Length: 120
Image 1 (tube, rainbow, N blue to C red):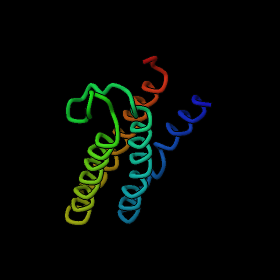
Image 2: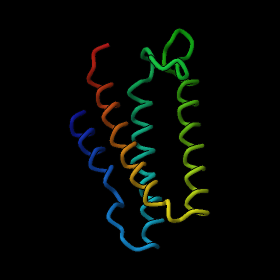
Image 3: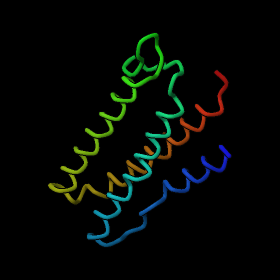
């Protein structure tokens, strides 16, 4: 079941890509947020209650918990807001953001998948 879930999430990382018109580029950016948010959420789920090696995210006792999830998702929100402002004021940069979101989602899916299979 875990393998199926991980495969489905990796496939969803490709949603909304391949748009070629300028109007489609903004739509691609919006769609690129779906796998990005899904990947970050899966990473939170895969890390919950386990030892956190990132000192910025480590909560009490070095574990990943509610405080850690809040920090991680706050960074995601700030990054999304920043991207929104870039898309509105510098539309030529939108394609770059789409590719960055795609790469981030794929990398984060991989890390979350690793977290699920590693023995702790």
